[in-house]
Length: 124
Image 1: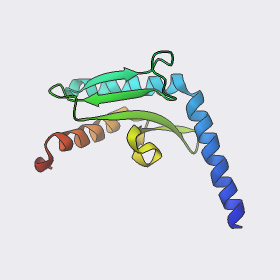
Image 2: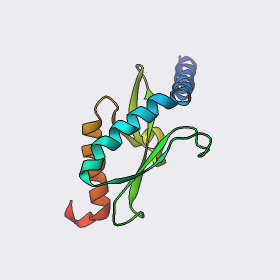
Image 3: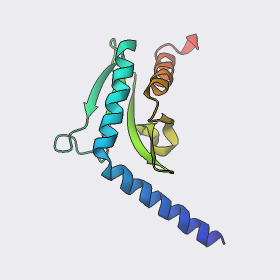
Image 4: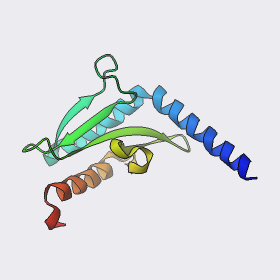
C-alpha cells in the first residue's frame, strides 16, 4: 500500500512540474496581475519573464522597496493540484506557498505584510 501511495505522489509531482513548465504565459499574466496590485503600495519590481534573456525555468517577479534592493521577495507562480495556480516565494519552492492566483489582492496584502516586517522587524 505504501509503495502505491509513493508512486501516486511521485506522479503528481511530475505532472505539476510539467504543468508549471508549460504554463509560462499563464504564470506571466498572474505575476503581472500581482504587480498591478502591489504598485500602488509603493513596491518596485524587476521582471524576469523572457526565456531568451533569463535562463530560468519559470517567470519570476522580484518585489523590493524603493529605498533598498537588499530587502525583497522573489515570487513565482506554480501549478497546484486541482488544476489551479498559486503564488509562491521562489526561494522556498512549493514550501513558500503564499496565496491562490485567483486573488491577487490578497496575495498583495500578504506580500506587503511580509516585506514590511523584513524592513522593520520590531514593528510587527
